[in-house]
Length: 156
Image (cartoon, rainbow, N blue to C red; front, side, top):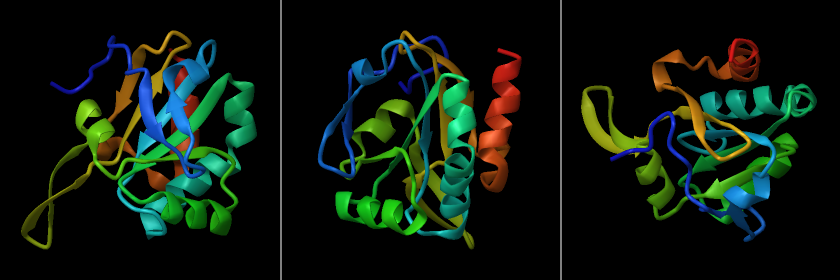
């Protein structure tokens, strides 16, 4: 059963681009935007990451930290961060354990073919580690995702 609004996120989230553990307790007292995306250096995922990069200071002023998650490797994340000067951590969920817990690894269809992959989804998490909002794939505008979130959290 995938995590839902009202659930507490797991303590261990994964390993980041620097091979460091990422834990829920790293964000105690801070709100967290945990976003799952399909693949480093693809057009939509790059637009989404750059939206967070370009609005990073505003998000932090609003009390949010940002962490991205994909099934890409640590080295892929290092290159992605370097190429686009991303100021936030990326979790390398190569075993898909975290995405399975959050329900973001699932069946997709492209050109009529079905396959499994990462479902672009964003979780807004409060200072206690509780999921307060889930933004599903069809509601995400990759180019303006940070602004979408800022509008959303004004009303939370």
